[in-house]
Length: 129
Image (cartoon, rainbow, N blue to C red; front, top):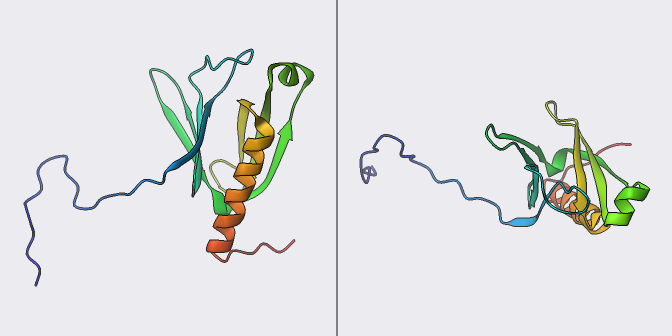
């Protein structure tokens, strides 16, 4: 029988949570400059949207739940080198996640697509169309 190492103190955890490395991160841009408090990040398993300054809010979508990805670039967005990526998922709380005004949106869309396909093949997840 294994003996416990140390008794837990208030605020300690008995397990550790390994975080995925961040593959991409950006902020919502205004006139091409990252001046907002909306941050986006992509890890190997999830897409995360953080908003707020005083009161923080975090939404995440597991990549194996993503159904479709679209890219929209208005004339103004093209002038500033940004675009809006819309991610449609089967997630109940966040069925549509918009990454607004991100830099180099074509590359980011392809990166998300690649990670989605890797997650689905790793989980042996198939969607009948």
